[in-house]
Length: 246
Image 1 (tube, rainbow, N blue to C red):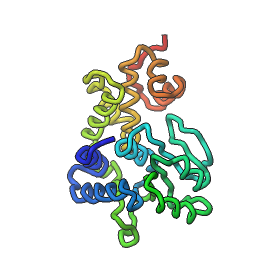
Image 2 (cartoon, rainbow, N blue to C red):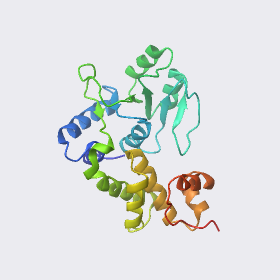
Image 3 (cartoon, rainbow, N blue to C red):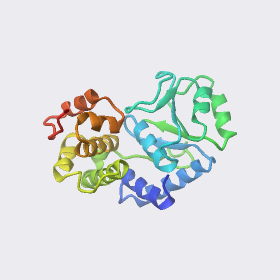
């Protein structure tokens, strides 16, 4: 869990270091949500679940539950690719106690009014709503939503984004600095930098690979199957020099 200043630093990373007004509004909205006085609304292009999950880990801690309420996805256990989910609103709420509940506004569960009532009556669940486009009507959303700009609009900041996510990966895996090379940085910039979530995933996986004795060990540290890690690398050509699987 991060302190207020550290949360501001992370919000600047996802919103843009030059966009001080947006960062300040986002911090206010997050503070209200953490005090259970409002729902935290995230807006962005594409799937913003990874971003909500990342913000949850930094605001509440990785040990707290993060549950997606999604009737289409149904009830699934968490995996390296996605968080735990529930089809029904009440079941999602119960699983999220002590943590966060995320729901897409375009895919709400049946009996969503019952879920909203439970959220209003508790101080034990952080409520997060996702709007998967980047043009919300500010007249309809209070407090101000966190509107995440496309990374393509921040071309001059991508290298800093990569460097900061790499530093997070080094800290998370408990390894020495310098294990994410300039070549790794350049590879992520070229092959895995279409979104914040992709950069976060790529930097963590490359640091794990560089600091493990083989690919199986790297995959184990990441909580995924070795074949999945190899396939991820194989879809991005040319692949960086990787470990053998002795």
